[in-house]
Length: 397
Image (tube, rainbow, N blue to C red; front, side):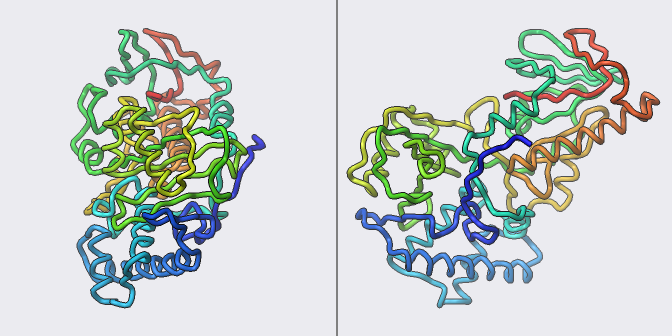
C-alpha cells in the first residue's frame, strides 16, 4: 500500500462525473453568483436530457453526434428547453461534459458516450499527485529517459528499437505504449509497416485535448468550493477553475480548457494564456490578484503526446478496440486508448499494460519453450546487441 492521500470530489452518480453539483460556485456575465437552486434544477434537467438521448440511440441504427441527439430530444420534449440564465447554466454543463471527453459535443459519439464502465466509489483527487505512484511502479526497473524512439524493426524473431541519438535496443518483444497522438502522427516508423487493420484502427480512434493553466497566488480570494465556473450562451464561452486550495491547502486555481478552444489557447504564449484566463477570472471575482507563479500545459502540440487522451468519434467501428489492441508479430500495444472499458484514464492505461504484458509473457513462453518465463535468470537490457528474455515498455515521456 502506498498510503496515498485522497480527497473525495464526488459520489457514484454525479451527473458531471468528477464533481458533485453542490461543490460548484457559478457566476454569470455580470459577476453575480448563480443561485444554487438554479444550478441544481438545471443539473437535474441535464440528466433528463442525457437519459432521453439513450432513447434516440435505441431508435437509430446509425451513429450520430451527441449534440444532434440533444436537438432531437428538445424537439420531442419542449419542456426540457431552457431560457435565459438557466440556458447558460445548461451550456456550462455541456462544457463540463466536453471536458470529460476532451472534445466538443459535435465529435462525441451518441452510441458510445456513456459506455465507459465507471468504477464504483466516486471520484477523488490525489493530494500529492501521481509522483508516488510512478516512483513505486518504476522501482527496480531499468528505465532509459530522454530516448525518443524513431523506428521499430521486426527481424529474425527480434525487435530492434532505434532512438534519435543513433542507439538501438534489441529484445524478443516490445510493448508499445506511446500516446495515441504519436502513433497517429506516424512519428515512429515501423519495419515492416503495420498491417492495414492496425493503421485503420489508429486512424479511426479520436484524440481529445484538455489543457490546464495552473495559477498560484499569494492569498486566497475565492469561495471555499471545489470548482468556480462562468456560464455563457455557448459551451465554448463557458469556463471553470478547479480550487486546489480546498484539497491541498495551497492557494492554487487551475483553469481547464478542452476541445477546439484548447487548441486555440495553445497558439498563445504562456503570458498571453495567463492574461486571458485572468480576464475571465476577474469577470467572476473582480478582486482577483495577479498570480505569483503559473504553469501552462500544451498536450496538443507537445511532440511527446500530440493530444491528451483518446475519445470515441461518431461512427466508430464496432471492432475498433480489438484491432488497436491486437499484437503485430512480437509487438504488443498498451495505453489508455487500448483499454475498452476505461479509455482516457490512468487506471485504463495501467490495466491495459498489465494485459499486454501477460499476452507477451504467454507468447514468449511458448516461443522459447519456457514454462515460467520470469524464472529465467536476471533480466538485462544493454544497448546494441541486447539479449532480453522479456519485453520492455516503450514510453516517450
